[in-house]
Amino acid sequence: MKTITTGTENFKEFIDKNYYYVDKSNFIENIFLDKVSLFTRPRRFGKTLNMSMLYYFFSNKEKNNAYLFNNLNIKNNKEIMKHRNQYPVIFITLKDMKSNSFDSQLYMFGSVIAMALDKFEDILNSEKFNEREKELLKKYHNNKATENELRNALLNISICLEKYYGQKVIILIDEYDVPLQSAYSHGHYDEMTNFISQVFSSSLKTNDSLERGILTGCLRIAKESIFTGLNNFSVYSIFDEIACQDYGFTQQEVDELLSYYCLNQYREEIKEWYDGYLFGNTEIYNPWSTLQYIKKLLHSTSKMAESFWANTSGNDIVYNYIKQGNQSMKDDFERLVQNKTITKTIKPELTYREMEDIENIYSFLLFTGYLKVKKQLSINEYDLIIPNNEVRLIYEQSFQQYFKEYTRDRKNMFVEKLLSKEEKEAQKIMNNVLKNTISYYDNYESFYHGFMIGFLKVDNYDVKSNRESGEGRFDILIIPDEIDETAIIIECKHVKNKGCLKKESQKAAKQITEKGYVEELQNDGYENMIAYGISFYQKQCYITKV
Image (tube, rainbow, N blue to C red; front, side, top):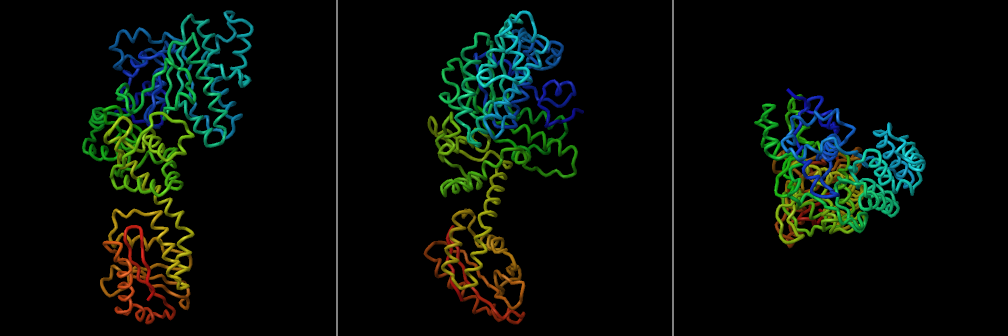
């Protein structure tokens, strides 16, 4: 039985070690549709593995590895097979260009170019090159090139490779947008945009030695930002039917996978957790998470699905938007968590600066895999939902993290106001917390009761709930460490409309008196007590002191 691997991005290793491989070789046919192509998909959807496959298929340095494709679907396309191992290929990945300064990024790019030239080390001193070309190649290979020389590195290397092999060059650029995202985060966005724009312009636009250029990334960055003047350039995003099945797994591929490992009984579980992406008109599974779960089923006693994608890099995006966003965005996210749709205008191409506009955030979340199109309403307007349970858990965990941090200081202030009998100030604090943290879609009484139990856990106090003991017992008791300090009794009520808040709060306070809760605690040795009735409606409360 074949082994499942989730950390391998080298195509040759996949085939040679007989790992379970979902055949995506028909993707090679799409390379001939355009001179330059950009394929955008969320992370962990197989972009790097597909680029590695392209390298081994086209590279004239890999003729000894031609056998890798003997049992794959592409072998049936006789015309495409004529191109196998016929081209010098420059294959670079920018996924590690995440340094915090532009100079460091330049050095990283120089290292990427140097490693690409390692594939052609045997030709660097060829007599086919003049002294200027030899010197320039040497500088690139030793990572000694200047910034201006690096701007034209892919162009200059392409010219030399065509000169040596008598064949135009294929350029593969994986994760092209990573340095731009990093530059935006670290404050050198203008410098990096200018640099990358020149790299792409010289190598993909004005390069007579170019046969094909293929790029991958998460986002389609606006043409005017880095692809200025590239008229030979086509983008295939999650909206396009071209290549829609070449990234991620289709239902048929998942069914075959489950059948191979005799795990058909987990079909619905996998579908609920890892399906739900829509590429073109095709439903797609997250391949990383699907394989992780299959591996867990095969090698673990626990069969419970989990959010594997949440444990990879980049998932702080939802938390940051919740933390920094306005109330409208928080409400949108709450609707999404409740499996409801939101309607938004989607911008097909962006710059990272446009991420500061709240309306563009939804475009970013869609293209990076945190949202899914449920229905197209007009040209750029869509109903959006969360794709599956895995991504929903990321939103829920982000809310929990935000709630924990947001309430850390406020809950102490709230208790202090209750102890000092400043119930109106306490009410303001609570209303602020309710407004900024919790959903009211499940606004029943036990929800608020549970919320208060968690919120009232502060230093030097213990929180007790006697709801499980039945009628005649208080809802919540906040007990101090020292018996001679003040204890707090709280009775919670949920009301059906805003107009009943004050009345029900007073009713809750009266219940504390009528039921003799204070006397009961006095019998337990607590002499100092204060009691409140609190009523809740959606994201508002009213507090009455007994």
